[in-house]
Image 1: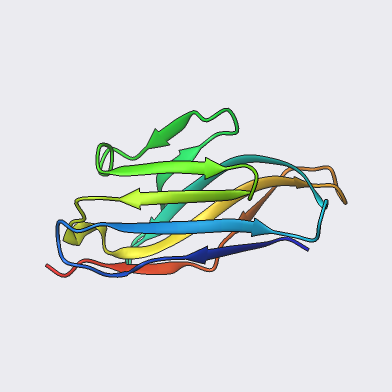
Image 2: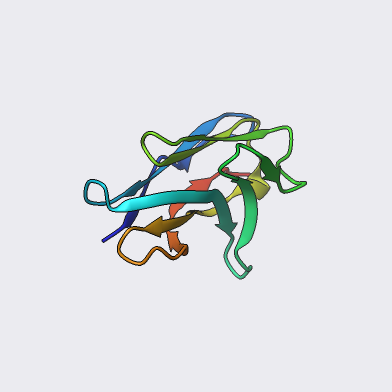
Length: 124
């Protein structure tokens, strides 16, 4: 059984920073491989959009709206992905979701797992 657990988030003033964390948690040895890990966000009434993603080889991709302000990183020892958010703006307000593509040993097929979501609020 794989769980994707997020932490971080909260309410900060414009210009401040936050860091989001996410880990894929499973019983010891049950994850064969971890692929792309990423962060998405969804504001009320909007669709869920990509914020940033990082491939297994470390290649990263950012939405134009966050490039230069947000930094994604990963720790493959802990099956973790992080999102450092600097210079936050009111338009960054949304629920943020972690997405992990991984291959469990049980199936040996890549599947997508989502975190529970965490709220980020930047008052205008």
